[in-house]
Image (cartoon, rainbow over all chains, first blue to last red):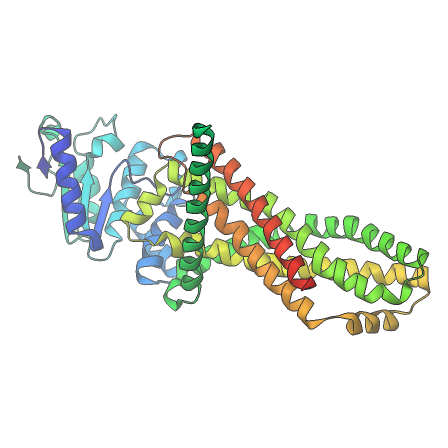
Length: 158
Length: 262
């Protein structure tokens, strides 16, 4: 986890890291939304279909298995506007780990889940897919540090 | 005076630039069509969906329009031919007017009104919502995934639906010819085959391909001109795109007419 004192420093660092790891970047960010004319399963399967030319059925079954890890099979056929903030974060996280050898970057997760009550939410979500990424980094500000209780990544305050 | 000339100059430069950009984009898409790597699983899925939405879903309406509009047109044409004693020219008039001119024109009007506007709005909404950025971040080529299936579908739809319109109109022609000229179905079909000119049919095919290509490519180009986070840019992009689609249809129609008379 990288904690930045100011927005412009954070965005600069994010741009650099995104460019460095462009091929295997799995970005979870508010300004990288889900595709609105695809359902959740379609959004997730698309990564495998396009990046690895996996047949639709296989890609969807893989996507469904990830949703099952979060007990969220029920949202498979919903679309982005019908998701809660927590569900949206999970789907974005799954989409990121579906990138082959994913380098997952989570950009200010509290922008996606602004009304988060439970400080262990990110820990719970990330541990369920921690086996699927090659590395993961969270970008945020120091004053949000306590919201990331026990997250499975190192903390680096800049 | 200077301001007026300046304004004309600016507008000409802008138009020329836009025309050049459209041609450059067209050539990029054209070469992508022949690249096997473009046809991955996701792209094929979008292509099938697009064909369903454009060509299959519209069938009931299209068949109704073809019969309601095509039959009276053929009937009136045959009646005029009878009135002027030109019954022997029936085959060439039906092939030259109904098949090569009326069918593609009616088809392209319907598809442009229904699908081109939808494509333009869809791409503009995706641009405004930053969904195109999402595709780019995840290494999904928008040309392969979004644009190519829509353009290929445009070409296939116009070619297939034009053929369907021709078949329905010519079938109603068979009924009118029996009623007006007491002509058997066999004589009617023989007459049509004898009147079919290969060069006209070739021009028709090329015209359908060009119409299908441009009535999908232009809305995509204008959809991309929408501004991120600005919802008001969507109607502007659709308005401009649809006007250009109309201009493209007129230009292609005029060029095909000129080609036929050269």
